[in-house]
Length: 179
Image 1 (spheres, helix red, strand yellow):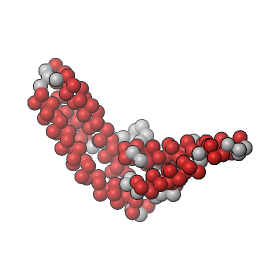
Image 2 (image 1 turned 90 degrees about the horizontal axis):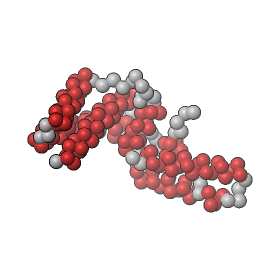
Image 3 (image 1 turned 30 degrees about the vertical axis):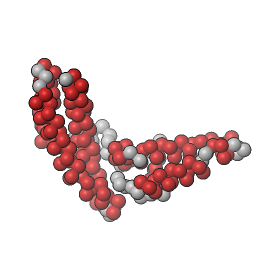
Image 4 (image 1 turned 45 degrees about the horizontal axis):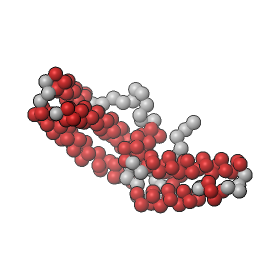
């Protein structure tokens, strides 16, 4: 079964930066239209259909209103988050490996200065990632179809890097909670 097209469901173009007000308007309009209470006298088949549409509306809004979920959704629809398609640049992996080694050392020798240093480095990496991807995310909707695969590949790399950095942040939070 293929993933439903939530953008089509809402009548919106696929975008990493959709019009959030339009998204919310569509959600509320369809919530009213597909509310099961308004279809209580419909046939059982139609009631199931309405319930399915109400569920799809809720799922669509939850997915599209959250930037990370929306990004994963778009990448997933383009089959870019499948196993084996997640290679990252070696230089980034080396940076992450260095950060992870510092975190492992903190397990044995807690040091607030090292925690602060790793946190600063993660913040710098994250800021660089954000600055580099923003033009791609904001301009994606206006790209011609032939340019979208390259943009999606950039977004996939960004998304995967961001997930690595999130795991490091989670580890840092554990060390901060201990001190």
